[in-house]
Image (cartoon, rainbow, N blue to C red; front, side, top):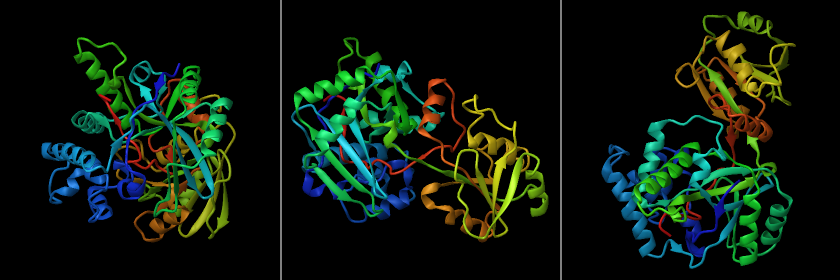
Length: 415
């Protein structure tokens, strides 16, 4: 059962919220963060990517970088750019993209739920990435950025969303990418208590995006519990910051592939090889987007082709084997193009669907890549089924958009 609690959020005053908020730390590099922050001293990048305060040659994992994160976090609070709420609340954070809005509860999720796999993952994590974020959580004694969860739809929780969001939001702004961000404070005690009760009846939460941040936050909380001889389980460090969305609100977009060469084949021989496992149909020079599950498209030599797997090439009863990313990885990337390890092979790159099929075309037409493969997006049902069965998705399978903005709210581990 999902154990959650309200918390005293630390957040910017309404009049400066757009100066403080930033994109998540892991969607841009140090140079991009430095450029986005510019001369804005209130930008959260000074806390989540504090290397921007140093010369570009500085190692972003050096001790002085983490020290600067702490100094900047403290300074933001001293200057009133981040202010802690007096009372514990839940919050609702909504995002609008292309006219569609998704609404999530901002919660303090339970460390033990993660350790006992009641918070379920669908991706592997890398220890080096976990350790970087663990250091950041440790030194700041806070979850500066939220993680992104999903939960099975619940009618009463949806009713609470509808009721709260009928009121005026605390924050309401549009970022430069055109995405809307809306934020409400739940301050009614009866509603807060009911949200806690309703989540307690939900069997599991699912990590949608942010596996490394989730692992880091939970592992630091677990460390604190183990190091506290008077640990009771009620301390604030037993919880970490998350935004949990009803599964039906979320939209996974495609995550596509581009490959540098055809593994020694001519374009004609490559297309012929595809016919062993796929029905191949020429679609012309206009972009062709896969329209349904088990529908693929490739871009080769200025032309688009539709691919449909032949009968018996996959098993819909196998949660992993039925994924389009698995079918294409096995039958195209491995068997024809000789790519066996998606994590390490330098011949392949990955393109988030937010960039559109035009980005696939551009990279092939430029000569950088030889062929592009477009996939139909994974569904939330597939993601949750894989997590429920204890399976792990192949690399580069899911792309969630829009990303959560950082800086709207922070959770301190000592309250």
